[in-house]
Length: 125
Image (cartoon, rainbow, N blue to C red):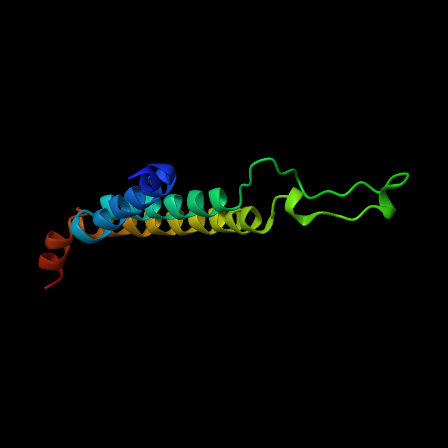
């Protein structure tokens, strides 16, 4: 039980991911599906950013001053910037995906007058 409570942040990520997945699979309204996709993407981004965090570590900038060149660099003292950089890219891709999805939803609403999947499928036939 103590181990489960120690990793509470993972439970939050999994809960957010499941909420987003549920909204994408179970809901019939396209806008709710888009919101679920956004929640799912956000949960994954927050998960990766939190994995890149390290207690007591600093940013990976090595000072090249007087005497700094002769000291050994301890990698454990620095945070890995790669997850944070990749998630910045993922945020940009997520915003682009959200924009395209909203534009498609707007055109579907203009054509069919609704965002409900069942009604759209009925009007197509």
